[in-house]
View 1: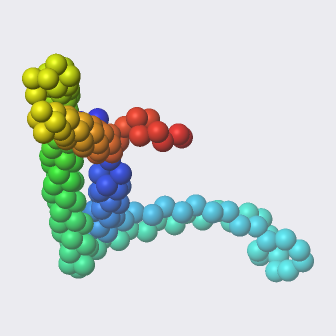
View 2: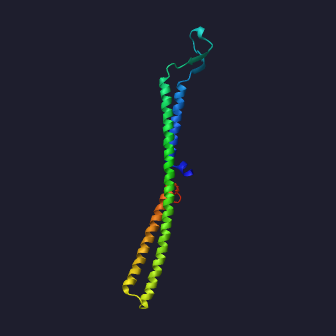
View 3: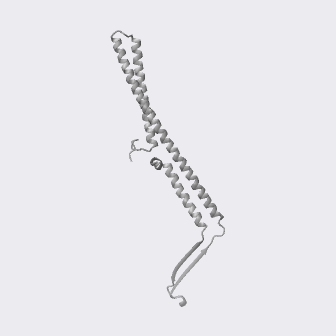
Length: 188
């Protein structure tokens, strides 16, 4: 869950949801009555008409009620639809991230087991090659069998390296999917 929350695409959808929420509030406000109160003070300076001397204080009250609110209702409906769409998009992205993490974990486990099997196969083929070498030195085997065992040992070494590489790739994919930047060597 913490990985899902840190994903940039999820954060982007959350920001878009906040913006759509503000659009919805604005559309709802357009449908509501409006009451404005203004108070201001005025004073004339200089030589002019003596009737204008002194301070004038004015209070202004304005009330308006929107009669035709189809546009505002339409904006509110559109904003709510956008919020719903973004929620579904966020849910889809979250599920995709979770599936990606699970897939990376399964792949990581599988490549680890494959590497362990490759190490065991290398150990076994090395023991067989050493035993065949002893038999060859004792005159109990021929060069062909010794060559077969050494070739099997080389193939097992190659499989071990390939399994190690596959595990390292799976590990990098897991770190990338889980946003473990420190493990990837990313310095902030």
